Amino acid sequence: MKRNPWKTWTWIIEIAFLFLALTAPLNPLLTTKVSVFVWCFIMVALGGIAVIIATIKGYPPEEFSMKD
Amino acid sequence: MLTITIIVLVVYLLFMLWIGNYAASKSTGKTEADYFVTGWKTSWIGISFSIAATFASGAYVLGTIGVFYGNPANLTGYAFGTTFAPFMLWILGRRIWAVGRRYGYSTFTDLIGDFYQSEKLRVVVSILICIFFAPYLAVNFMAPAILFQQVSGGAIPFWASCFVFGLITTIYTWRGGMRGVIWTDIAQTSIMIIGFAIIIPIMFGVAGGWGAVWEKLPEKIATYKPDGASFWIVLSWFWIVGFMQTGNPDRAFRLLVAKDLGQIRKGCLASLVLLTIWTVVGFLLGWSLAVVIPGVAKTDLAFGEAVSKFMPYMIPVLMVVVWAGGMSTLDSGMIAISAMLTKDVYRRNINRQATDEQVYKVGQGINIALGVFAFILALLNLKTLWFFVGAGAAVAMQWTPSIIAALYWKKATTAGAWAGILIGIGLTALFYYVVKCPIPGPGGAAIIGMVANVLALVLVSSATRPLDEKHVAKYQGIFR
Image (tube, rainbow over the protein chains, first blue to last red):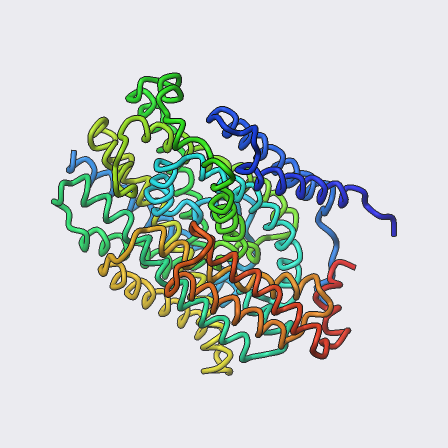
């Protein structure tokens, strides 16, 4: 079965989102209210991209059987 | 203004009753599947609007926005959590729906009991989640009643609002089951979005416009604390909000009701949009309230106080928004707990020969009992709103590692699930109710509980005999 490269991209983007978002309070560049909220919404956009890739490309709906 | 508010609320309540009754009329029969999972006929609109409505509780409108008001920067963790949640919904939801559809599940404890082949585990988890989650139901009575008492200057007593609110919600949930809950949730989400779209621009106008709000917003409450001191609070909010959507039974069970996987996928994407709307609403109101009415000590009351003081003509809109938020979360909690008690306790352990119609009627009866229970609890009016929301969510999400393991990890064992869930729930409850948690914020106890939960699950599973390979393959190989 051919490996789906979008699965890898899904996790790369999701992990990047989690790392960059959750370390925001440790980021020495985010010291003003403009930088805090601009970064926050950039992270929301990045996380949103991960959701879109996961649902459409990485893990699209698959066939399954109703029987065991 | 009080008379107009009451008239608007009465119209809203009658509308909800009509939807619940109409949903009941569309029932395809008095069966467990129809009452608890809509007979697997829900579309993406129902899934996403219902998740969004359940998330935006009365406590969100007053409590969360109150916290945003107190420190908007720390609530960036909340924004990260609402972005993470749809990802979890899809990764977990695609498999749990397929397994649930194949084996006729209407609760997550169905999966836990069947995969780990333990009736005791199913019942214990079900009862524990119900015990800790039940106070959350009461919160949804409290927020609308607190607000009504506040804006009516005490003319409408707390107990009277609680009574009317609980009565109407219980009636339409009892009548319509999950279908009634989802259809009213669609209406309630729409009402909340429209309400916020009206209130927010006016609030910004009161504050002097967008530029003035941004200029006057104090730097010290809109930035992180120096030296990384805000890290744990951001992580804490992220954790509780991010895992709440797949952990709380009131909204997570929406993953079981879909018509097909395509509807869940669209539902997750729509949830991303709707949850982001709640985040933006929270920020905008938090910012504007911090400028319009600074220094309110009890932050739950800031929103109501600002509307009463500066735009009293908006009180009817605010009331309907808060009541819609409270009802949408209460009805979802009632139907979820009712499903677990009916299936796990009644059908599995009290009356194994129960017919579908008997189960249906017991489910309805439990909904009424839950409404009465939550009403009585709400009258005690104990702590701040977010305490109960956080406590309920923190404990409920402790079944998540065992559910993920059942769907994705071949080595998960029954002993591992027991160890993980009991340690997770025990530690979370300890740090929420007994000992001060070393991690601040609403998700601190949940983080400690979940980390210990995962460690216990992995260690004990690794040390005990794995489940039969063919049995595991029925769940984890469902897409092959």
